[in-house]
Length: 113
Length: 115
View 1 (cartoon, helix red, strand yellow):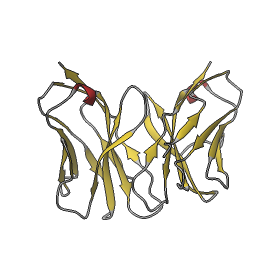
View 2 (tube, helix red, strand yellow):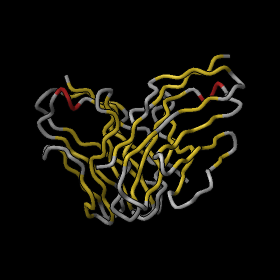
View 3 (cartoon, chains in turn red, purple):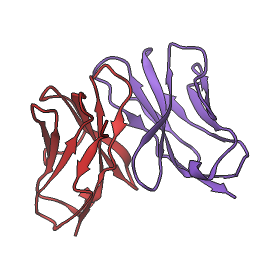
């Protein structure tokens, strides 16, 4: 069974641009969560999607958005990039929101210059 | 709000020896779960061990075990017979029960294993 796949693995963007990151969960998993990891703030929860609906959202500005498709694949979008958005973005999947075990992808390293 | 604190930014252990990583948390919830995740240089977070708050028995997974002190809100990870492959960042995480809980992570402990 394939694991959680995140694309791209690395990304360099210019301040002010927007970016879209993709996450394909484990087959059969319908819950996808996104986390931002930075040296200063550590790991912070962005949002969770289940059955194409956002179920939970962390404390991030509206520039951060996401969506989930009918095949459970999820995308997150960051508009008007700032230098502080440089981070490792991790996606985790679960078969349902009630399941406590989350499986993580290898992340997308975003660098904003 | 729930918080997770890891007071040891870095730890070092000799190969084959035992090391304990500390974690404390704060919550007013009665239904919750605690986790230890390992993040090697490959960046992928790997679940090491999980503890349900309602279980008094400490969880164990091969060389990994926890000391769960619910009243003290402490959740330490013991790694026995440390191996070179154990070198990584270790994150303690909390999740409340129910379907709305997301993971709340500590800042992490970088574990080095000396041959």
